[in-house]
Image (cartoon, rainbow, N blue to C red; front, side, top):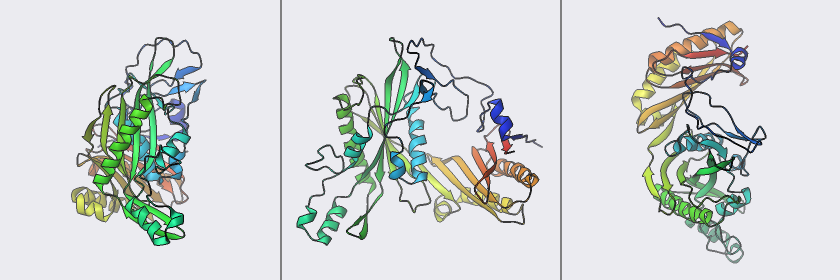
Length: 388
């Protein structure tokens, strides 16, 4: 029988451990650098299952991009979270975390992104979304609505990440750029108090995304960057993201990426990933085996207490294989011992039903306060902590 250790959050933080699975103390290979710009530094690498990039710091502080927070106003939280984190995963195929450092995008300003996301018009010739095609002041209400449905906005958001390496002049320079293009699957709008919407097909998304990527590459290569840094010889990777409507339980997903090497056209490849909410009709219809075992897991957890226990899951599939499961357990409890017991029980059930799947389980009170976390990865004991 396996044993599960319990550790308090405060103790774990003092110990400097990673809460989502360690790598037995293994360190990443980090290039030897001699940086003469004292204002720049990097966060030392910390081994983790996710193999995250180390970040470049400016005067000891994290360097935000100018477009920071823009997505919060345009995308729902579940879409935005994976739009950001998934973009980093895509970057790893081209830029090795062992030799590149991460920095939020510095080449595109907020003003540039806003102009590019807006419609093309005489007053906004840089717009990457289609021209409306009518003058609202010269047509009636229905014609204006029809024009928006016939020429829907497709490009919803642009997110830039930079990947840095030490240079000969003693600083860090951009050696890779990754840009995410979020594309509407449903364009919803309200005009003159009248709400309406237009579905965007997968082929429309792909065409609009590829065309936008080609224009952005050309603009960046020809001086659109906010920095004086020369990026003519920098590879630029684009990732196209299917942005789901806000009322959709499932988060959006990347479906294609294009790599633009200097002086070359983009090479596009498909990405086969999807997100599924458990329990749901989509899960039952498309992933019956996983839906059944989640149902058993849910039933066991809910049967552990006589009080209400809510159990939901968010799964990510890659190449039709369950690649990651995140479970949220919401409980009513009267003592910390109950939390410890449930956390241990959840860890054992995660291993029982999802032995081959990485799982993160978050246990929270009815008020939303996190009480415990389980992180399980195949071929190693679950890691558990309970807040003090």
